[in-house]
Image (cartoon, rainbow, N blue to C red; front, side):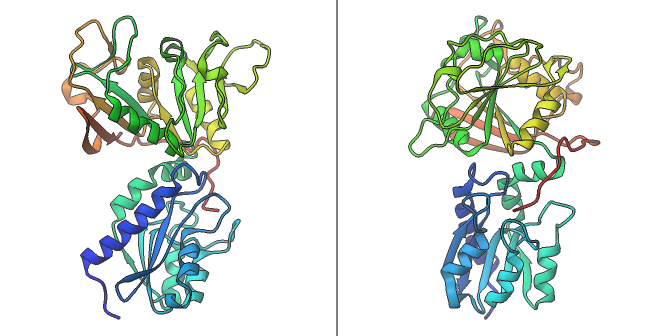
Length: 376
């Protein structure tokens, strides 16, 4: 069997990536993984990891291929696991199936296990090649953060006018962006594990923070309310949803319980609830990806404390003026050379709005906030 062309290998890996995306938001604290089995240029088996504790993508694809997997190629978006967890090692299943070549997207980021799956396959006579590492790494960036730093991956989301305002001077923000942008937000909520807002945003916007789309999955809703001052009338506390609402505070009060609302007391930080303490608690609940939707003070704190991993900002073709509220209340530098510049920037048009996404440069010296878990 001849080796596939570079284009052919990329096409097959992109099919595996499309399968992996089906598991976004449903596999935590495991990664989203897709796999395809290819024989003589034709896909004979497909699979994705659907839920934590369920069979891994490689095993699902091999089962679908059956005997056709012998001598075939396997494309998987993440290095096959090589340890016994809630499921047996995928590396052993691949060897037993008689696969000839394995194309791997991302290497396992866990320093305790990374590389072992590929090493076992090579010892077993399987040729191991790499394909589309960058795209595969981007797909599972939240899991990489969770494993290497022991905390949720944090995405800051906002919609701004051309002059960088998220709301009027009175706090009105409905709507800065258009319907296509809001549809993206609902899809994103369905993919993440939790969404967070500050008390100011909860009061001003009274958001539902649900994924309002067919087949959508509501995330855990987290509200920062340092002194437990938010009223019970807010939609966050009254709506029906399969996902709970979590009220993070640093108050010594012992308030009466609210049905469907869980309160967790965190350490007090310089700006209210200690964000590092909160992220550690969320990680221990299995929260792998956290979407932060504001407001400006909350965005500023995550940026100042080096706890933001990526930014997603919708830029609307509108001009508000000098009195509006900016994306972040964080004080800026005196020189343009010292501004925070995003990396791996991508631009997409959605209706009249432009979505700009980018990765926040890594800071040295970050330490895990909670024990990391491997792929189970």
